[in-house]
Each structure stands twice: as structure tokens, then as C-alpha cells.
Length: 358
Image (cartoon, rainbow, N blue to C red; front, side, top):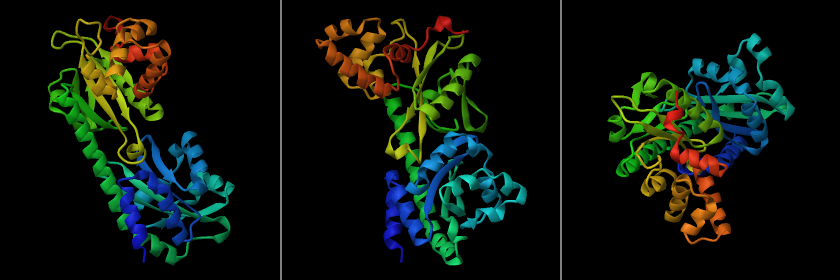
């Protein structure tokens, strides 16, 4: 009966941008006015996709931080039902009175909500919710039957997407190993998804509890924690200097968020890449720059020249470029590296001076 919709759900495992339209269709077939999919991770804002009817409200809800006080996901998790449930049935009267969701749904004419949680192998959970018009009351039993019939397929699609994200993470660190770069792929929670052999032999980075990594230098590790938090919010890259010690050389740890359609909902990751500090002003060679930031050869040469202390005009002359053309190249480099101005770019490539590190 729902074969076409099931096929599209599996297609969404490979093309996450299809989820809003699929959620809209599921909503229509279950008598719902809106629907949303969220990737729920303890202590982190959900990643999500939603139908038009609830998109703006959900976006504001997450941006405001109110997701932190929402007790609905925990109630669904404790109920541990392999199907859809009426969320308000799981809350106590006290919880309902302080629920931050009810007034926001009512503002846009929505009321009763059906929800389910699907555990992911990565430790997160996929939450699916469908809301009914406020004047329509609760979803009838036949609506729950429709959603429960689709749930196994939605779960498998989510699992496929999560597995694809893990395979992409493994491929990324393997590619960086081929370039001679120690690297790991981290979930937004900081948990390690994949590492390469070079990182396993790198003394600057050590395994820690709960599947995480720590840097050997405590102040640098504090910067790493802040960089991981910032990468989730802003998608900005960051470089962290790790001073040397008798047992290890100095290095720079690059935190590079991975973005794109395939990573907006499922499999969002951050790459952690280590480059050694040599005697050349801390500027990695061109192959490393290209591998880290997907720069073209000319972009890499221009970036290296800027990091080496040349002005944009001098770097442009060295590449036989007009200044306006060099500015266009610089704009593309800034975009690829997640920086916003030339000084940030230089700091990203070189890292902060090791001598300035406490």
C-alpha cells in the first residue's frame, strides 16, 4: 500500500535532502499536519529535517536552547516502545505543565503529537514526530497503525544512512593517511568514529574514556574541546598548536568540520588532523594544504605564499595573477577553509606560534 513511499524512504538514506518531502507525505497518509526527523545526541543540539509547517518553529526552538529542557525524548526513550506513541501520554501532569513544546505548537495551530525513537549504532537516536491540527484532537488508532507499518523501513533507512556516514569517515582518514597525515574522524559528541594507523602512533593525541581523544598538552586539549563545540555550531575550521616535550615534537592539530548534503542530518563529522611543525615557519607543504582543505594547486600555492608572510599583492605577482583575480582566489580559499579574513587564514594554516602557548 505504501510501496512508493517506502522506496523513497530508502532513497533518502543516500540523499538526506529528500526527507522533508517524505515526512510531508507520511504526514498526509497518517492525518498529520507536520512531521520532523531529529538526530538526538546527549548534550548537543539535534540535527534535523522537517516539513514546512513546523520548520521555522523547530528551528527557533533549537536555536533558543529550549531543547535542553524538553522532557519528551527522555520519556519516549524510557517507555522503550518499538512503535509510535502519544507523547503527552508519557508525561506526568507536572511535566505537561512545564512542557516548552505545547505553547509553541499551539501558536502554529498544532496539538497532539505521535513520536518514536530509533537507536543508532553510533550512540545517537533518531526521533520521528508527527503532529495533528489542534482542532482535530488525537491521532486515531488507524494513524498509529500507518506509522507503525512504516517505522521498520524508516529505521532501516536511518541505519543505512548512519552506516554510510561511518564508511565516509573511514574513507576520509584512510585518504589522509595516504597523504602522510595522522587523522581521526569524530562525531559531534567528540566520540571517535575512525582513526588511521598514523594517529595511533602519534604521541600528541591519546585515547580517553567514552571513546574520545585528548591532547597531551592540557591547555591545548581545552582548546580542542572548545573547537569541537564551535565546529558544531558554526562549521568553522580551527588549528591548535601543541608545544613539544622531551618525548614528542611540537605539532598543530587541525579541527575541520565536514559539511554537505550528505552530512546535514546523518553522519555529520569533524576531522582531526595532525601536522608536524618543521623549521619552515609552520607552513605545511602544498600536498598537505590540498589534502586538508580541498584546494586546487593554484589556491594551495597562493595560501602557502600568504602564510609565508607575503602580502596578497606579492603573492599574486608570484603566481602571475591580477590582483582582482587573486582576491577571487582568496575568497574561494576562505570559503573552503571556513575562515573569513586573510589573518584568520594565515593563523589556520600556520597555527598559533608555539612560543605563545602556555
